[in-house]
Amino acid sequence: MIRRFFIIALSILAFGVAHAGVLPDDRADALYHFYDGGGVVIDGPSVLVRKKVGTSFSVVGNYYVDMISSASIDVVTQASPYEEERTQWSLGVDYLRGNTTMRAGYTTSEESDFDAETVSFSVSQDMFGDLTTLTLSYALGDDLVRRSDDPTFEQPLDRQIYGVGVTQILTKNLISSLNVETITEEGFLNNPYRSVRYFDPNAASGYSYEPEVYPNTRTSNAIGLRMRYFLPYRAAVEGEYRFFTDTWDIEGHTGAISYIHPWRNFTFTGKFRYHTQTGAHFFKDLFPRAMATNFRGRDKELSPLTSYTVKLQAAWEFLSDDGTATWGFIKRAKVTASANFLHVDYDEFTDLTAQQPIGSEPLYQLDANIFQIYVSLFY
Image 1 (cartoon, helix red, strand yellow):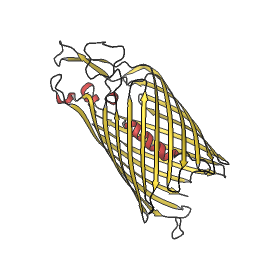
Image 2 (cartoon, rainbow, N blue to C red):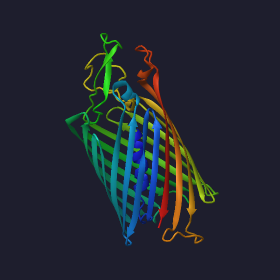
Image 3 (cartoon, rainbow, N blue to C red):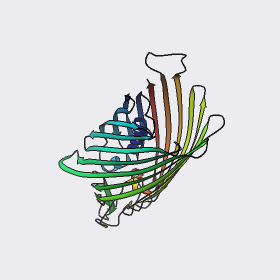
Image 4 (cartoon, rainbow, N blue to C red):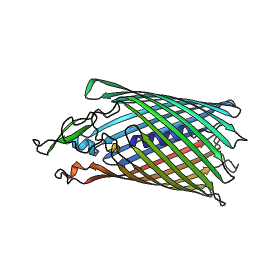
């Protein structure tokens, strides 16, 4: 969940939302992100540069760093705290021809025990007087999972992502988008360090540990609907809903509502997000014996859970293109800061740090604060 939050946020910053018929603005962004929750601290910078080449091409590059310090509940109950750094490079190109925009991208990331490469392609087409935009997308991931304590351990992980999206202008004040996504994964899908616990009457704690064993395939499907209504006084209200299901029997529902309010050179955003999901069929907090089932997992993110997120964001455009002020070739400039406050209730994953007898351990809860600030220069 943590890693996915930053990947999604930075991908949106880097590549934006696909719209046909117009190339993205030339811009440069410098971002700093910070996550603190559940014994995990993640922070680092990201730098993006986008530039048009002629009237038909636009290229974008992004550099992103994660510096991770982890003493999470998984770590403190089974291993020692650790620190690592992850670096990611992305390069993309847009090609505009009439009402059609084609996009291609390549992303590579490295850390001590995980390498990832992803290539992606999408095509967007404006139709019906530019009231409808259809987008088709595909991405192929080629990852390699390793263990820092075992140089002989190397396991592949392949991923394919298929997407279809439709954006529709319904009225002069209402716009909607519908997105469908299918992800297929094959290879080593679990964490090589994580273990499950099983009942062991001979152990002092009453239980012992053994390695996780996951299925080597997973297919997930998601459908999301977003609608934004522009209010008469320039503000907007946005609602979102997403349904998720996969072959591991996880079913998730996510809803969010946002309010966007511009005032002078500022834009303020408030958002509330709610998420609930069922657990994977092979998840169990405590197995009855060793090797009790063919597949076994105790990742808390595979547990039934409910989460709540409150987001507050403010953007200040301190240089506008109205001609009143200039910074040489810089046409516009703004700074954006956001804070996300996350709370997660895990319905079956227990907190072993409480050191309570088996059956009386409290359920685990996670609280996290996520902050981002970035400066955008448009030229």
